[in-house]
Amino acid sequence: MPNSDDQPADSRADQPKPAIEPARNPSPTTSNRPGPLQGLRVLEIGEMVAAPYCAKLLGDLGAEVIKVERPVEGDRSRLRGPFPDDTPHAERSALFLYLNTSKRSVTLDLASEQGPAIFRRLAADVDIVVEDRPPGEFAELGLDYDALAKDNPGLIVTSITPFGQTGPNRANKSEHVNLYHSAGHASPFTPPSQQQSRAASKAGGYLGEYDAGLVAAVGTLAAVLGREWSGTGQHVDVSKQEAMMSLERVTIGRYANEPDPFSGRGPGGLINAKDGYLIVNTLEPRQWEGLLDTMGRPEWGKADWCREPAQRMERMAEIQQHIAEWAGTRTRDEIYHAAQSHGTPAGPVRNVEEVMAWNQSREREFFRELIHPEVGAVEYPTGPCRFSSLDWVGSAAPLLGQHNATVFGDALGYSRDELARLAEQGVI
Image (cartoon, rainbow, N blue to C red):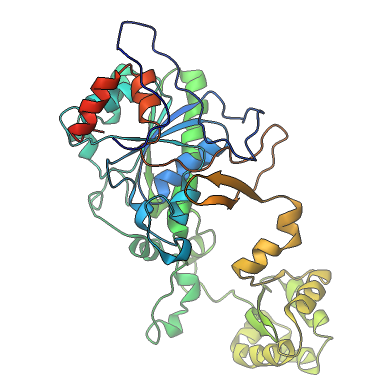
């Protein structure tokens, strides 16, 4: 049987069902102060990024989260790097360790004969189910929202899929790169004049998947608040594509009125200083004037053609060349501080090492150390909010099946022998 940290109950006698215990894995940052979501119980059955990130956010804020994984293999992210020393190991994936803080892990094969019934018992005693199975798959197993709500009318089920539960593309499969481009995210980096000359760009990592997880967490909490006055739960249908489109901010909305989304872009952008890159934005007239002040009011900036946005756009290449020549003689920090002092948004492009060492991040204690039994002490990013009653991130990610005995034994009442049989049969 997969790893477990507790001894199971001896029998399944008719006794009141014990509450699911709080997550374990003590760490230096575990706090006795309750998080704002204390009391909410979450059942997650998700893989890779979006669904696990949604449940991670809830767990880090104080909710009790049980993660359901496949026996033996577990969540697919366990096999995605990076790994310490570049050596693959199911318990040492940095992606998995980050996405699954403040959770407990149980293993369960939903394709087995007994799997769906066990899952229904788990879902009957939680507030929220977060899942990412293809549309229709849970219905075939008798685990869709309508079925689960019969046992638990207050249940909220959040389903996260590439294109949502409805529509002609509902059954389509997609990876992050496909969804990223289907949502128009690459358009700000691919001007129409260059579309035929270079490939479209893609955000690093799984940015769109994290967007979907964040939107799902917000939608889930909205449903929790709605339950306070309605008394019933509901199904939250999250489309990853729509989540990314909703966070596109300007480009999609502008295109409806102005098909060329780049006509309003000002000079600056990504510029190369003598020690690296930084971003300078001049979308507003005062920001452009601030950049000219930062540059010491160069002569070319006083020309008549440089005063109007439309004329600047016509001579954008010339302006960019002037900016590049000026920036190449200065450091990122020199330009950053000078531009900020003149009211022009600017910021260095920092690599991971620089971000980790940045005094702003350290002063706010954005990175916290947790202890994991396989990788030891690891620093984790926490969250962008600070609560007076919460130390963000309560426990390190669980080992595969670490809490089988606690959840299936103590909470559901399976005996030691029954758990052993379920493990032999591959159910858990």
